[in-house]
Length: 416
Image (cartoon, rainbow, N blue to C red; front, side, top):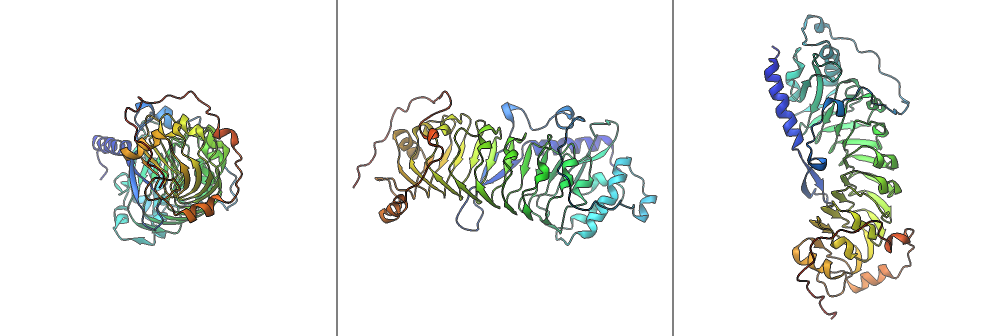
């Protein structure tokens, strides 16, 4: 029996609230296999909520730049025999019913019994499925969002399922056992604005189909087995949130970071190499590039990150002096620089150590506790290195705005 419209509206309102205040776990890389996490509240830009109007998220004039598919198109879906006797609340729900049932038939594990509710014509009551009025017809009812987070469902692919749900706006499937690659046909989903497939077993190259999806603002593919390179264009898309940590991406950080407007970016536990580009991520609140192979000094342009609260470069091969302009960032709550090869810090940075904001353990800074051995530091620093972004170590491409002056700055301990 289909729920009343008022009941459905209340449920959808509750879901919207939960999605608006969702807490996402951003990984702080460690050397072990354990996932040490710190919670970041993924809120809104300029104080606005994540909920957007139909005109913002569901514009009918979205221009898709789809990648041409090299795979064979799916054969037309045939309705199961029992469908003829079922009564659906809307033709759009009737159209996705065989898509859901076909996906259900390939599921290899369902320890929580989630799919037991995927029967009958009331798709809106299926566990993990949520309905709403589509933007192109406010009197219709369509499948608008899917939340499989933590369901531990196993399936060899999402191909033929997600890409066959034309009205889907949110797809969350964190912590399941989904495999395969991501279908290029998802670029044909005009309303999809949140896509989370983190902590699964997906493999292959970066899902190029997400490029050009103008509605997409949230992309989370962390803790999978993606490999190769990340397309530089992804950093110039309309994304507010981009989590790609704990995969096997291997490349230098692209220059496109300098024009990126992403707010939350995690690259941790990959194989990114080379120096940090100058003048990047001007709007960022969180940037995590820990446990990679980055090298070189920290660029002074990091002092232009006026909104940044979390910076994590732990476990790289960075060296030189920790710039004072970085330690003076007024919104900075955590600066993790441990397990690098930094050799010097100034008084503001010392003050951040006292406050527990800055972590420089396991570096090569004289006079500070818990540093690398002299032999280890000399061995690393004895090799000559080139710095391709020399200008970024002497030039600050912004007008600096610092917090109130420090009233009490601890002195550097004398070198033994």
